[in-house]
Length: 519
Image (cartoon, rainbow, N blue to C red; front, top):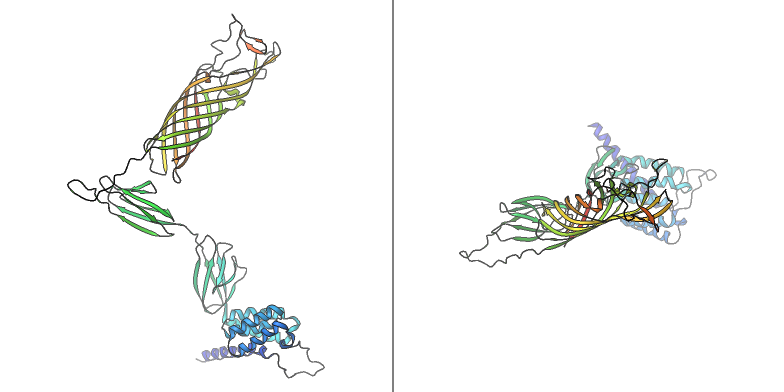
């Protein structure tokens, strides 16, 4: 009991000291009796009433009147205005007196510490000693709060006052009682908490910010087996639950023999919405009812697409000297969706070959193969082909966002290979070209990803067989000669042999990316 009485007397004494010390500067303008002889008295700066001028003095005088009348909030505003104009540190002491009467002890500490640090010659040693004693007294009514935020750059508020950005460089001095903490950062959910301060001088509070997610959950309950479509894509049957972006969505529920249901459903952030859709039977002649409009068949839709990737020409018959040749194709396709699953169309393609592989032809290269090599030599300058044909594609899951498909195509292509030649026997140079048409028959596999609307994109692979001049390669023709810089075979000469004609069968393998739009 005696210990409690002692602590009570100490608390009351501290409160009296706090009130007396902070009220002292408001009468600073009055003369005080000197406690030392004039010869040794400490030189004192002029009081605020004399040193302040202009608007700063007017604000100071108004603040004293408001303080004396008990309007501490109004006095604080006037003293702060006077300090902003004059930068006289003694006004910080007056502001601290107002904050003390408003029971803002953490702000009292901050102002008095600034008063000591910025006072300089304007305050005496006795003023400094009184300020330090006041700081020691007021600290008992505050605590140090350490706020740890896992996200940098977040704004931290204590009692709706911003105290800095995370990570905070030092603990925040707060008053005893319940403090309101708020942490904000763009792209994250605002964090709020109430913290009780009083049992300890030091507190730690950790904050975990959660990212904002603009989506909600929708549950649709319909008749067993009814097809549920969201934005035109079938997502389930009977009952479906899923997450959707926060915006408006078109919900359609349909079932054979039932009146279809269609409505607009708006999903809000973090919403968990349930929609009940009981379908009603279509009326019959025996069961009269309201007329139900019959949906017209969906008209054919058109598709426009682009293809690109990498391909390989593979000779599969004839001369064993023929080479594989790589090429880079670019194509356009135009089609028509006759139904949800079948697409008919045409395609056009252009491809450039890798000349480093001699365009897939088994001709003699541009360099001599041995010191005594006198065969006619070739260096290819341009290799390309043009292709066109018809195709049919079968879509396996046309109503879903991920739609695998397969297809077949038939058409033809025409190759053009330009080269420069050199005959070491005559020393003559010439230009020439070869190539020709080929028929092709191909098969395709791919997957379409449909992110929004009629847009689609996805990888594909195509394998095709070729028959014709496009894959036919020829070597040097025995008995040929140069005439007017053109390589010709004179009449009666045996030009070309079965061994040199190369392959007439070949295969192509192409893989790449297909993008397009259905409208």
